[in-house]
Amino acid sequence: MDYGLVTEAMSGYDIPESEAILLRHNENMTFRVGTDYLLQIHEPVQGFETQHLYEGLDRMAVYETEIRFLGHLKNQGMMSREPVKNRRGQWITKLDNGNVAMVSRWIEGESLDKMTLCEEHYYRIGLLAAELHRCAKGFRGSPAISYDGRHVERIGEKLRALEGNGLDCVSCRALERACDAVGTALRKAEGEFQMLHADLSLSNILQTKAGLAAIDFSLFGMGHPMLDIAVLFGNIGGLACRQKIAEGYRDGGGRFDYEALDACFVLTILDCIAIHFGQWCRESWFEDRMKRWREESLEPFARGERLLADDFCIIHAGN
Image (cartoon, rainbow, N blue to C red; front, top):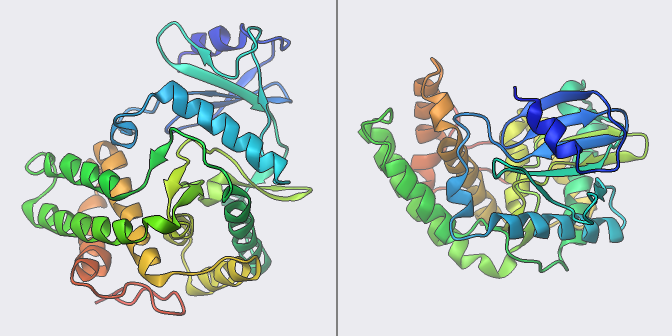
């Protein structure tokens, strides 16, 4: 880990020199600096590929939209990290190697992936998702990632190029058909699009003294609200857990669209493969997991079949 980037980034802020502790490295390097600040340097870990997300977009402008989006959510009463300006009065710091860094104030709390969760936690996750969608609905900032039909086309192009380079022809055909079906469904649903978190996993939700808080909006963008629910369902196993999330989401004013939810559930699989393939293809579990994705989700959805029953059970699991 090159801590020289941390020193360079923090030198531009009126913040006392403090120890920087690496918290995680995926699409960003994320550090806790001292007790009061969080630093994100936009440099993905090797094998984490996000180029298809930003095709045709000015990334600096996207990061500026993220800052405005966080400000909008805070103005709507949501707990969110507060960005800090550098000495030049800018929210975003460009580093010598071309990467960018952003600093925000630390929110004290524990991420849910490190906790033992109960039914009440899952219910409150649903409430949080509903609050996020309600507060974000009026935000129309741009540019931002669009999780739309064109996005799915880019995924398809990326995955087709992997045939013979770690991805077998059976999987490639299944992915291609799934991309076509998801793209069609999303184009029909574009009238419902709004700004989303788009990566609302347990590791991106904090338990604080004041309640739950969504963090790390690095992959935020325009899409169908069911994408955030699909990400949650894809990261949280257990029918009872999904049902409590759904109960909280509905009680918070959220509405389920099962057709869009199925499409977004498949989209999360497609996006994850496109992003992580360079890492996953070397893992012993990937071939079996790919087979399950084909049988449980990709192929049934491409045939026009439902994936999630009304009670959120995965219909084709184990078939």
